[in-house]
Figure (cartoon, rainbow, N blue to C red):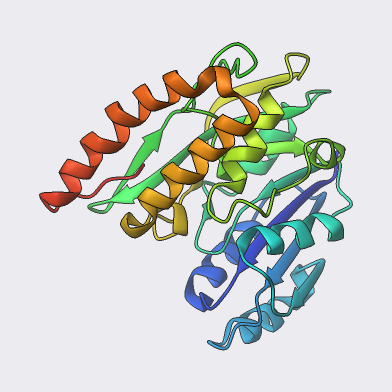
Length: 252
């Protein structure tokens, strides 16, 4: 039975944290290592952690240098065969979803599924693109971090989460991961998590920063994709920016 390390990053989101914790400790799969990295919260988050301490494998609460610095701290604490990040506010889709993923791990380097979010009290499914060939072409629709289970040793091979990127280090990590044509992966058509849309990558104010960071990444590591990246940006980002101007909700 493979050990799965689930890591939750939190800062001043006590309500969301408790929901996340409850969704993890309710899992039917038994070989879970649950780690929480809290950024020295002052809103009662540490009290929530203590409330569930008996069900948490390990946790720290200390200042950090941002989200991805905290995620890298969590990686150092993890000892599982696979690692899954379910950050504060995100919740596992069902009580048996980790068991479902575990049934599909086999010897895959990566297993990923789909995410969802809540809109107008309804769960909206985001289906991940099942075939990822980042080594062949630029792909904007890479597997989402809150649905990704990765062999632990693969993180260090791609420099963990590159903290030089303040907002898209998860995108950088996944892109680097899937740029290896020898990566063995599997997509399962299951919703893994319900994604909290209040995170930094979903905030309207950060969209220009996201564009700049993604462009820097492409220019630095995949300059052959730059033209395609700009086309995708023009199609997706600017059209959604227009929707924002008219007061409509969107997720980039």
